[in-house]
Length: 260
Ligand code: CO8
Image (cartoon, rainbow, N blue to C red; front, side, top):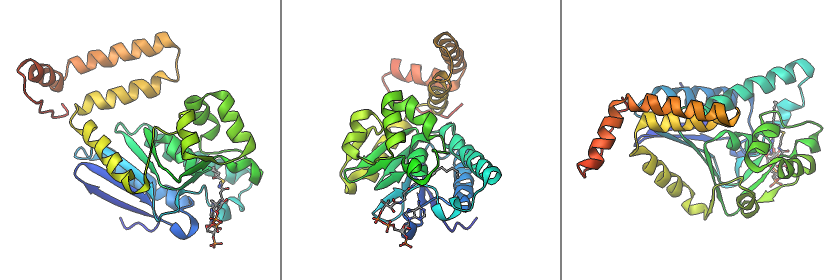
């Protein structure tokens, strides 16, 4: 499929997705969201792709939010449908079964911050700015910002960000746990690729189940989460990769995983 709003490339086991509307600071139109859905569905289905890296085109923005031109047209019914459809794309990214690393190379505001929140981990360049400015536009976050942000950084800090709408620096985002690491802009992609390479040598099913255990475990009481963990642990014990991983350790050689 030819994309108009994103760039999509698969190389060395990594799916590279770039939101590419730099003139509008990569603002998310519905068409852009549909293209993201297509690209991430492809990544999910392609067993040769082990991780994904999501970033923004140009040097100014990751994503500066939902496209305000489209937002301005929404009424109660279409606005709800709009938010729902976009949320489904972010759910796909969050539960892809493969890690998605957000490279926040500039503004990550509103829907852009929410898109980053749906990723498995977030790296930011030193000049990145993050925030949930929706209240300044008379709306609330609609792509999960009121939910994922508070789960990630805690209720009090999330409230401050969502209610003031103020932008914070990459360093402040690091301090509150909104991003995992801050790196110089020129090193952002290389750092993401280095993390992806570390994940790629591990057992694919174990990576997938670990991701599922953390994501789903966050939503249930501890006892249920521990039960889920034990169940997925048991499932891992039935895989060829567990036999290979434990044998390779005992034979003092590198494991060759097959994702089986
Ligand atoms: N939508 C559309 N166009 C945008 C957006 C956006 N979110 N952000 C920037 N642009 C455009 C500008 O209009 C401008 O276009 P033009 O050159 O044609 O005038 C171009 O990008 C460059 O922007 P600026 O000139 O404003 O650049 P500055 O460096 O002066 O400022 C800012 C950068 C601070 C990032 C500024 O552009 C800004 O404040 N942007 C809006 C940020 C924002 O409010 N984002 C939240 C949007 S709401 C949202 O995301 C809700 C998500 C949930 C939706 C769920 C239901 C749909």
